[in-house]
Length: 261
Image (cartoon, rainbow, N blue to C red; front, side, top):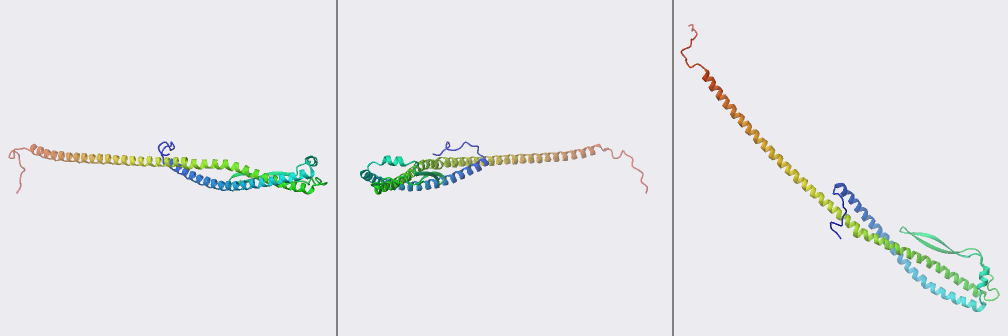
């Protein structure tokens, strides 16, 4: 998408050209950084997808084992749900959240930990204590796997949105902003070249006019000097003729001074 419409409406000057070149350089730098960010996020996204697949497979196996373990406890000791509810006052299995920075994106990470003493130590003391303990450990492992899976799923959703947004920005810079700046720079350079050609043509015409005026002035001055010289010669000849005409024509009528020998 290039043409006259795919450029910025700016006044073509040297300053504008410098500003547009700086903007183009900034857009290229931003495109490079966003491209690297997208690649890093995509790599992490693929790792998370692989971990989610493994966690789901493990979750299925763990829940299967936990269900069989609970069935064994129910078969041996009967329903122990009311005993567990009576003995538990505070939650022993807890979850805390922290954040992980991945290329400027904050991803929540959930961690499970146990706090306090075992409140179900006496459960199954009469019969089935071993099965009860095994069931407890199996469900603890299942909940830990579930917490890990929840952390991966949350990171998966966040990374998916961030990658889409980053890719849209990369494509916008690559296919819209950079071509627009490049077309604007080409337009400014073309206009400045046209202005330079017009200025050169104008100076050439002005110089030609000055030369014509100088030649015309020189010709007029020479003509004036020639006319003045001709008038001066004619005036001198006329003055000599008048002087001769003013002298007496009778050479014998005058008296000469006495000559003493």
